Structures are given as C-alpha cells and as structure tokens.
Length: 236
Length: 236
Image (cartoon, rainbow over all chains, first blue to last red; front, side, top):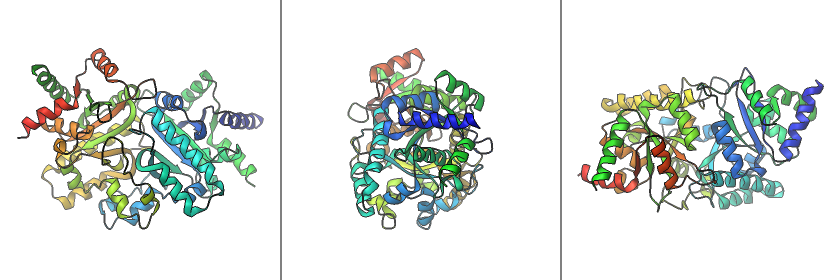
C-alpha cells in the first residue's frame, strides 16, 4: 500500500518536471504500457524517444471538459451522424472493439506553423501548442474557444487527439482516462502525450520487459489500478 | 538517362519480391524520403522496420479507383459536408498546407481480427488484408464491395489510408501518387505501405543521408521526377 502511494507521488513529481512516466493499463484491457509526458513539456526529443523506445501511435490525450470547450467530437459520433451520405461508415461501425465499448479517438490535428506535420519538431509543436491553448482557454468563453483553436490548428492532421470519458475513471480506465486523472492530481494542464511501447516479437512489450525498461531509464512504472485507487480517494 | 531507367526497373523488381524501396518526393514538395513496400507483402517485420528506421506515420496508399469502389471519402470532404453540425470543422479547414493544395487522408482503419490495432502483428494484418480485399474486388460489383469492406474492417482505427489523386501524377506528385503509379507499372495490387524517414535533428532525414541508408541496406533510392518521367511514357 505504502509503496504504490510513493510511486504515485513520484509520478506526479516527474510529470511536473517534464519527465516521462510509464503506465500499464491492465491485464484485462489492452495489456499495454504507454510512455507518457505532460504535453506542455513535449520537445522534439520527446517525440524521438516515443518513436524509438515506444514505436506505437504517438497521440494526444485530453479531458472531456476541454474537448467540450473546443467542440471536439468523438470521431465515431461524427461518423454516425453522416453515415447516410457516406454509407460505407455504416459498414465500418466499430462495434467489436475487443477490450472496450467505445473508441476515444477525436480529430487528428496539425499546428498551422508545421510543415509536413510529421517531423519531431512538427509533432512536438502541435502537442505543446495544444497544451498552451488549453491553458489559455481556462477563463475563455466557448464561442471564442473554437475560433482560437482554428486560428492555430488544422484538421486533418498527423496528431490524433483521444478524449477522456466524461466521468473519467468511474466510466473507463483506458490510458486516456488514467493520464488525464494523473494530470489533474498533479494540477497540470489536462493534456498528455503518449505512445504504446512495442516489443520485438510483433506484440506489445510485455509488462516485465516494460518494468525493466523503466528501471534502466529511471522512470516510474505505474499500473492502472494504482491510479484508479488514488483517484477514487482524491476525487471524493 | 540509362541509369534512372535501370533504377526504376530494379524498384519494380524489388516491389514484386516484397522488398522495401525508398522514394524521395522533391526538393519543392515535402523534401522527404519514405520507405515503401507493396502492402500484399507487409509482415510484422515490415512494420518494425518502418517504425525503427522510418519513425514517421505508418500509412496505406491506394488508387482513386479502389477508393471509389470502396466509397472511401477524403476526410477533408467528409468534414466539409458535416461542418454545419460540427462548426469547429469550419475553423480547422486545412487551407494552408505549405507544400500542396489538398490533404490525401481518407479514413483510419483496423482489421476486425486485430486486438489493439497498433502492434506490428495488428498493423501488418490490417495492411495485408486491405491489399487482399482490393485484389478480390477487381471483378466485384460496387454495392457488394462496401459490404465486404465492412465485414473485415472497422473505422476509426490505427492505419490511415491515403488516396491518390484521380489523374495520378498528372495532378499531384505526392508519395501516394508516386507509389500507386509504380505499383501499377509493376502490375501489383495498387495498395502500398509507407513511412516517412526521420532524422536525429528533429527534421526529416536529409536526401544525402537517406541515400546512404539505401546503400547500406541494399535498397533502391528513387526520386519523384524519375517516376514521373517513366509514368508519362508508360501511361501514354
């Protein structure tokens, strides 16, 4: 018990200092470890670490409130609203995701100052600027928020945004909800950057090997249930 | 002149043998080298090579005719058709892409037999099965094509599909058009897999360094204009 609280404290401290942490969700979900950083600290080097040591999708995560303010839709909802005009979307309905009921994907964005959008410089700019915008919007009216968003970003782009469930960990315990909860407990802007860590055998890196990677690199390794337990106490 | 024809021949032979080739678009476009394979040969190892040696976005490319048969929309068109309901899409209009006038992104898909969709096994399955479906559809009616597509795939997913311009290299000379043209000249299924190669300096790998990588690994290095010139003769 004491040990995992210590782990959470260290993770919060590291996130505040712009360091990576590792989060393994759960044997019963994806069974995947993601390498995570608070997006306000994302640099070209962070992207390089994520693509070299992670190798999965490099993505943004944000809170449901932030998405609501920016009027960011879930892509699955947007698709189902236009599937009369594009009937192929009816055929492609993602109703059989093995580890969850709902896809958390929203739009893919690029900052308008990026060139191709995919280089380490470009992706980190998109991420950092999205966190900065989120921070700025705290006291800004909804109507202006989407204008400010569009002034800085375009979509389609190369950086996907995943949006957390409304009731966060009470509803879903995916990496998006785990990361947003941690950022809230850390009192940081609720925008995280992450990437799944792949193994050399075609699968996700095993939990044991992810722990070894954490030790070698001096990174905190958290499991989903540790975050869920802390969150339940904290959010009461 | 003789040398580049030889290069094209070798590239076509390598694609047919399931080997990677490298394509640099143009100094005046993205200035980027992509590592490319015909998707019918994509294996977990191919994805590993793309993420480790490439590091950019791992994506599918297909012909405009195939997209039409599957009723695959350009994401930008789909967005503009539903921007009354989702006004944020009006703000995010991608009207300022520095190197081109139009985004070639269509949907992101996963094969329904994938688990998370992001592992090397999963992404290669999605790619290979998409090429197999395309091959099967050659003599199949449009109405059935989308049904067959939806039976095997879901969207949103982790593998983006880029769709080539209708008139291919007469209209646009991005990696998508360059690759689809080459696959047609090679008489292969017009579905390619690729990934942009990143450098260690935050930018795309320079042309010179990409050429060195090609030499070290025994891969053909082509430039966009070599493909364009060959295509113009071939498609007459």
